Structure formats: structure tokens, C-alpha cells
Image (cartoon, rainbow, N blue to C red; front, side, top):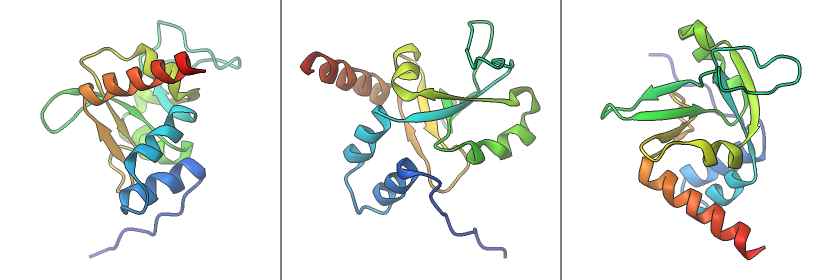
Length: 142
């Protein structure tokens, strides 16, 4: 049997995700970092040289094990490569602020970070709503 290659974090966010997954830092510390980070989403339409996501483009939304929709996002562009191959319709990657994405996610949609990868995370729709409230509370406090 072939073993998984060792995970080498591509950026600070990935390093923190790995530490949280290993129980070395609280998950809340990763979520705080996520709120101020950029993530990669896959789109079915080229955002063009300006990198602007217009409303005619659809992001990659998967179904989790219970059949609920989850917006797929990646902590680094190279984590999305298998999905380009598996779902060629979503060949365009776009680096965006996580906060911006969070504001636009419907209340019944969850998030999956690095889907199919051993270093990842899934947030249920309720957790996404809580994270949005956390973001709003932080912006009110500043």
C-alpha cells in the first residue's frame, strides 16, 4: 500500500491548520487566522486578468457525506490541482479574501477547506453562521 506523502505547509495558514488538526493549537486560533487570510476558490468561468468574480461565475460547491452543500476552498493553489483534473469545468482558480467569501455564503451552505486532502476541515452551515457573527462582532469592536 502506498503511503500518503508528508504534508509540507505552503504558507502560514496551512501551518496553523496542521497544528490545529494535530491538537497543538486550539481550532479557534486557526479560525481567527482564517478570517484574515486569503483562500483559493475554483470557478467555472475565467475571472480574467483583473481577477474579478462576477455573478455569472459559479464556485465549486460539493456535497458532504450527509448530502448537504459545502463551498470548496483551498489554503493554497496547489491543493486545488486534483479538483481541476476531476472536475474540468472548474478549471479557474481565484485567490480571494476569506472574509469576502464568508459574507456571501448562504445560511444553509457549509464550507470544506482542502476537500479530499488529509489536512483539511469542514464547517457545518451553523458554524459558518457563527463564524460570520464572529467576524461582524470583531468589525464592530474595531
